[in-house]
Amino acid sequence: MAAEFRARLRQYNFGFVLVAIFALSGCGGGGESTDAPSSPVSSNVEALSIAEQVYDASQRTPAGFLDDPTQYPGLSEFRFHVAARDVGLAGVADLSFEVCSNDFATALGWSDQASNARALPSTASGNSETDWYYQIDRALDSDPSSMVVTRVFKCDALDRSTRDTDGSAGVVLRQPVSGDDLRFLSEYFWRFSIYNNALNAVVSSTGATNPGVLTHDLVRAEAIVGAGVDNCDRIDLYRWRHSLDLGSGELSESTIWLQSFDARFANGQVSLCED
Image 1 (cartoon, helix red, strand yellow):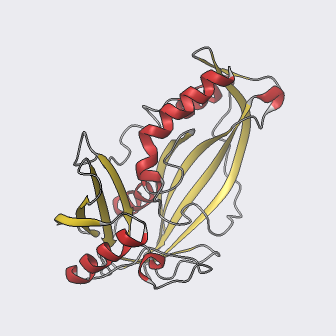
Image 2 (cartoon, one colour; image 1 turned 180 degrees about the vertical axis):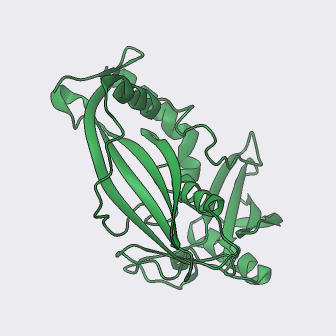
Image 3 (cartoon, one colour; image 1 turned 45 degrees about the vertical axis):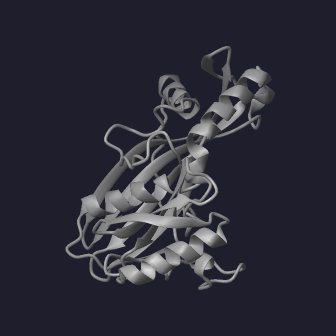
């Protein structure tokens, strides 16, 4: 069982680590939520379905979840957002955040600086942009089969400089802003987080509109290897919520534990473990 599991884990890691290793710093943290959400698992059938999703590298997000495919199939790709720490705007001990600029030349300079800071010396080979960010594509100098894809948020869309450990996640400046915009940000942050990797999955992605506030919740599942009963894995479920104040544009995030259960992957099969 152990050898099979390690082999499966290596399969997952090779598929996802190139994007996830340079994750948006600290995504998923933030302030505690005080409300008590309902449990997403009410039966063994639901628990088994979630466990199967966690162990399956091919389908770790629900239908309709944001897709951000590579533009370089067949090549290795290192993709990341330029962080304050990359360009000397935050110290090692500071909470780093993704920088923003409304000037492409500044973004291009930061792209070069950040690539060198991450030991990925490379040469700019192309660029593009969306409403939210600039993208600078770079050919890795030491390996022609690898690309470095760097992104810099546009400040008139999203300023992340107010991020802190109390739950501030930045300020959304893009107007008008909708529930679809918040869904994009929530799912986009997950794509760049450490949770977009082996033995993690998104169970659901749902939004809500309240007076003056938009919210979007991701329920995510994470397997902790060997932490369950009889050396089973423990599957932990969390709700990761982003809230957007429509008046101020302030974005906040909170994470709350929902539930845990035990499961295992053995002989090509996923099963639940008895308490």
